[in-house]
Image (tube, rainbow, N blue to C red; front, side, top):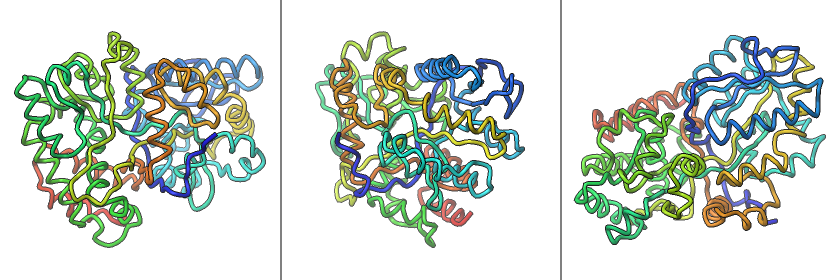
Length: 441
């Protein structure tokens, strides 16, 4: 097994937040925040397929094998979950198992003693720890201690494109920023939106800034921001990033009305597979959703994928990635000892079984477990899966999403300012100044 070479890379922040669409639903019946019927453990998870069915099957199988360790799951849409989980934790009413993305938010929980320190437990279970990609523990670690179990799959942000539209236009996916701007004109002239974007969700727009800043200034620029160095947001690379974004907006690079489109609705994905948009920058988790909902768009080989383009004169390595090295589950410090033991048993025996691993691969995802090369190679989606695997494995730097790298206060300011930047209601200079004011908050 070729393990991820974490010694060559840094994982700075948290992941692009997973956009699954469905109403909040409950399985197994919870009796309120932080509790579960019958004295078992509770867990909150994101709704939407294929993940919801996969996790529910894992919970059901675990419950069938462990009659005294039941887990009740409540499902929420992504944006609703983010609000409810923070409120519940603040009120001391968190579920036993807290789903999250690590990084800055986990740091705030850990420093407030709201989640369990799992370091000694992992030390006592080395086979479990060694099961996962070493790189996946970066965002689970706070001040040298592990506060979350990495799970699910690696999900970098990639450039998806509609092969039908590219064939019709007689063009190739962009390799440079000049190619991007040329394609914007090509597709606008065809009456097709160059890029789909669920801009109302804001974090989808953030993906653009992450890649542009990396390609322009290299990973050191955001590392300085992450480290809270004075005036880090005023780096010229930040200004150039904002300038390029506004040039793209002014050139009608994005679907008209992008600021009213949500990622939770998956409308941005539908614009791509129905041919109303030619390209979409998004997380690889959308592959599974498009495979399920895309009217055989994926199955017929019409979905293309590529790395983010280079910027002439940029300092960033073209192999650098951004996205999500894993998803994470923590245990509430407020849970009872019995609930904590149930959660740990589920982490060890139920969360990443062979059945779950196979389900993720079948849905078009790359699980974060070692020794799966043969499984990937035998998948009908092997080209995409190996693309994702190699992107993660070979990236000199893999940067997690900014809104989870930063403190919750700075993250909210970031999303608000990104929204204004894309709407051109503030200048790139104002964006940098506004964000610079958040350093240390």
